[in-house]
Length: 331
Image (cartoon, rainbow, N blue to C red; front, side):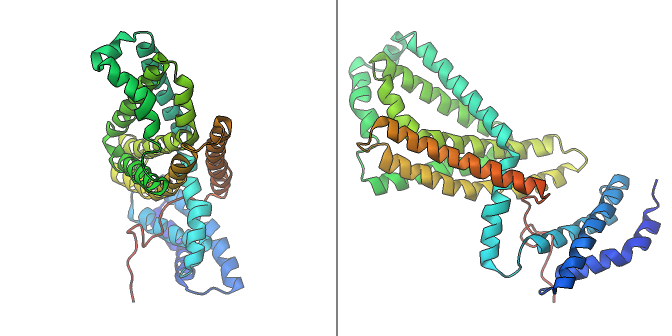
């Protein structure tokens, strides 16, 4: 057992000096060297204190000091360009990297449910007759399905699908904490996709279905899986908080995965452009699907390469102290 009072008295000078350096607007080269050295040293002190009393006053105060120092080291205060660079090169890819496996699991579950419904309805075509008259089925297969992608001008259609998909993704991130919203959204969409594929198969148009779904759907659906993974990770943060309190765990993961929402708005803009410009185009089917696959591959390269780099550097996606509500402006 460590006497925290004595431990704090012994290392107080290092803690105060780190706090001072982290608060400086401008640092000389020797100040930066000292900041780096103190950051590593005080981080070790923080680990010792948290092991003794994770929710105590010393742990909370020292956590803020270390967080300020980390923010000072990883960003240039007052530089909008540096802030944007840090967001896209470090924070966003790391946030996406943290939920990569859950994203893949949700994608596999979605595909499994869609395939099950497609197989069920495909082997029981009479079920469609109970849903709608045959002429409506034919109209859907021969006209409605394809016309959906070309009945509006490309620019307005792109905007429409972008806003709609971004809204769904943001809802998944925001309401994922409930635990049931994300599974509900994914199940309903998987069910609809499988039934639609089965109806196209009934009239020998399954190749048309994939030709119009895959170019944009590869990235669009992946974005929905990513948003769902972010929402469920926040849900799990308060179900299993670990050594933190439920409120601390929820706040920490909420701040980190909050970045996924605006990040996916950009991702869905790209998939919206593909859906509005590539999917209904006269390009060969293989080329349209290749374009969609390249967009998806680009996402995973971005997430895996930059996200793993941030993880190795021990830099997380948490908001800075002021933006995260842990520091107020003084002076």
